[in-house]
Length: 310
Image 1: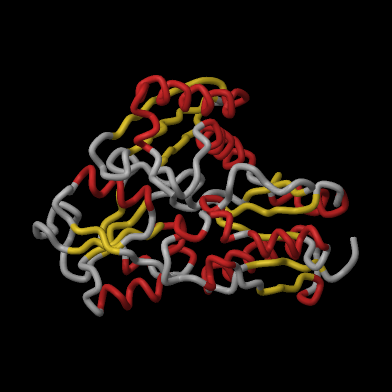
Image 2 (image 1 turned 90 degrees about the horizontal axis):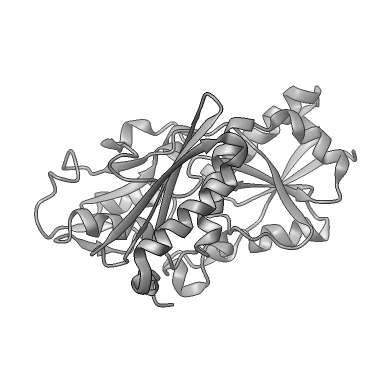
């Protein structure tokens, strides 16, 4: 393997921390020196247009497009991603077959004034640019006004302080990695609000033909996380999920068996449909697809109404 190993990442503080986590594990696993693993900061389309909704400019693939182009072109050797931001179909010649152990998958309710979602006064502004979170919040609190709320964690906290909204939701995983857990007013348990597909999982993308790098990454892969992610992303793929679809799902693994619950929500929050499946861990992806088909069947003729207009 040629040195140094070049890691591509977005430039946000959280993205860089996640890339550094991967670098540290590579160095530890293989006795590499500091200079053997370096970073390439790549600005993505999603970073350039933080004043607009993702679904307006092309969806979650805009978090990865420029990074994957650099990977395909050989300018970097691997890319580090938050798997909740990854489309289910990767560009030809690229693969993600290594994930780190999952961090806390829950969403965190955050407010500078109120202790919980139920405690919010009627009609106040709730900030989020996630279609999933907006739909789930509308289902629970249809009286709230949803306002756009993009930007990194620090930007969103500043917006709360400026009164742009009274509350928001952020991923517990991101807050943990940023050492900002004190900002989480109340974690939202999966039973109360299902998280985004693969939330809390860091994935490492490489070129399919880079076998030397595949060997280096193998010790980093967390198999339990990979199995859980397989069920969740299969559910998403079967539903053809994107930023235009409020989809949530969460898998757990115990005793060689996987349990998965998937959900789709109408964008206006008027209806949500869920389905639970359980089976052998080796059938994780099949179980995720089966859950998606069951949800589709429950939706019937109304399925199209669960997809936001582009």
